[in-house]
Length: 634
Image (cartoon, rainbow, N blue to C red; front, side, top):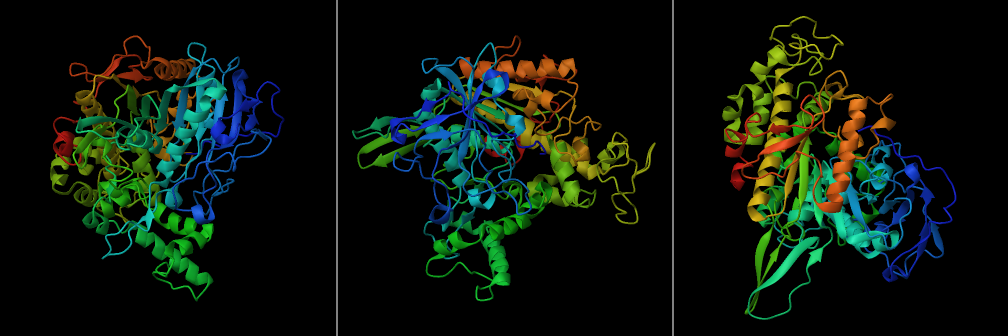
């Protein structure tokens, strides 16, 4: 997405802003500056030791009283973003584990305000807590429910999520264990627990929220990472129970692609089917060999101390090799690796740190230690979750941008066979997911350079009222039916039906309220810049479109801001902050999901403020719940 980084001009601290941190951090002091709406923002606060050198590809290390800064930290500048691309022109550094805190005006240490901790999205390869769209001032200073807002950076791409097995015959622990970005997030949550009271926040009332990859992270911490959220109880016998863990008390997920299972590396057999890490390292070797011929062009890490070697690899080589893999589109990854490989850099299910696939609901297991048995369960809590009207348009558009031939009428059936196997024929039996039937209504922005001499299979459908090269993005009947079918499929299967199933699974395990929403506000800005399928003219409510409405920053990107959009944004700011404070959106008519209420609350669009049914229009019951991965949870 093209939302820029926030600009923090060099300035001194407020005289009223000094904060003293916890005793674990040696009662270190820091001070902040005044931001929009009179809030005080503390930028660039380190929450972990820099993950560089011997700490690269290792679990994050907490700061201590002996390693913390001396004097008063001038928390006035945002920190560098975590490395994300060899071609990035942003200020990026491996020393990137920092967070930012927004505090409403008038807050004191006795205020005990609700706390909202945000995890940014970006497919686990891009983004930062300092993007302008995530300015926390509007949320923090909301008059009805002032909150303390925290945003953070975490390791991305290969540095955050590389997993490498030891070898094809080795069943020992992995060489590179992956999930480091998740562990960074967890350490930031622990920092919040230790220190947020000193800013005036209540560590016992923390809402963890995120969008896209950030929402995926929230779902994992909620249901699948006991060291973030777990309750222990005795089953039989006597012994010492591990302490309960409660790093947050409410969960809010925006556009979590629940329909994408995480790569399974929990068994030796499963690890053999996940060559991504080794393929990445082979690319690193080739790059290193070009610079130094004494380094083997293949398997260069297999010496006596492989981790020390990997920790010495220049960052540029890591990012270049990462870009080679990340440049492959979501659709192309489906073509080569199926659903679980759609995102190459993502958390893995290792049955160690991540012990559960979130779509299965809250984790529950029994541990036996001799005659002593105890249970470990994820602690249920109130959840707010939802999705946007046209989530799939983003991913179809990205696939087309990477290679217009990825989603043609000819290639689309192959994608279905790889991603959905035997269900491919069943899927194509529904017109919304049939490339040929979608050709007559496919908008021009899908494969708008459609040329029968280049691709005669996909370009045989009739051209209607405008040519295939028209710049009119609303022109239909000139685009690629495979792209439109893939967009519909992704929206319905990966997002809408999967979220609804996850919500119902949670409801079956707990009495805690689950609230659902559909964001349908017509686009007034283009969050991607060069993606026609998400342009204002397309009318598509794309993945990520809700973000500036949630943070109350939409007026920073759309001039003048239409009254309807201003009202939707204020509703969302109110609802998100009310949920953080009280566990409910506090909006009339927005009722929790239940066995008798399977409709979600609509935000924006022609049905603004009304309930919208999902299961029927998205073919959840008749199709998606009957095939993998949703079927495996029925």
